[in-house]
Image (cartoon, rainbow, N blue to C red):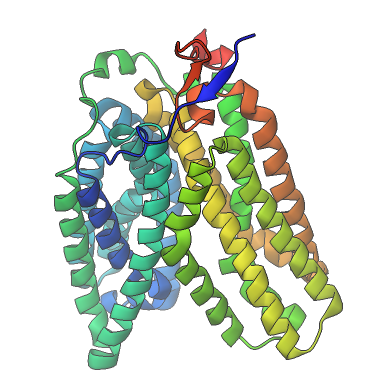
Length: 436
């Protein structure tokens, strides 16, 4: 049996061509997202003049339609390349937000919202695929971490910006915000257009056309990876969906703690995300194991909520305990996200990466869609029960990631290429279903 040693991380750490433009584009688009996501219902109500009920109904229907569109986006990436598709999506989002102030009737709003929702829902698939097109090895992990940090910082800046606009112009400022979003997405598209991919994404279209979603469905290790991510993704919904409900109903804590928790999470993600991911990357840990560590930190935070919900101490102790729990949860997020993202990108065969990542991203979408009904049903029984379910899910994700390690491609598990002790490259390993 051959003995392997890791190469130094210097080669994989090299910056990719156009990396600065890519990250600036992601940060700019995140500012646009932050300008409307925290106020989405109110935002579209004031921009279009339609009732909140109609706006909510349209957003629900178009959001579900966006989920159904994701597999088509994956096919488009495989045929035309992630960079080209991302530029189209940036253009659609820019046009959509420019038109929102003019969409004062229900049919017009529904049409604009549908097209924009299709672009929004599919963008995560395309962005992940783009990282796979522009980077190799450990550079993918670094871009994953940088992307997440910039998204958090940009969304926070966007929320502050729109707050200032509303303070100056009142609710009429939502119209200016819509146009600001349009400008942000247009500028992001221009910046990303300067990025150079490592290959001509359209060159292999003939070979890609023969492969489809059947190839994904035959790849059991990748489907296992997607299922493991679904379990972890339930935890990502905890802070935004379960945490506020848990505070108000079970702990009877002030609602202001929710804002404090979000602030701590956002600041840590934006300020320390790249540092933590870099430390994990330089440790040489396998992506499966670092992602599993992130899931274990999730589980530790959820157990902390169970203990807190059982003891129910005084307000001061509750505040300190909640902040500690949020810090542990956030560190888990920062450890899991870059490794899990790079693992999925690298485990996907290049020719059908779009389809693979569309399947993988559905795990996030399904988790976020299921979380509200699941959490509200469980918390109605006992406030600690949803945290217990999330603990089991996180532990299951960690166990699955470790068990899948030997079935996934070596280039996916290891951020850096491995070489044999004699100096030769380690043999590539594809799952049996795909190799066939």
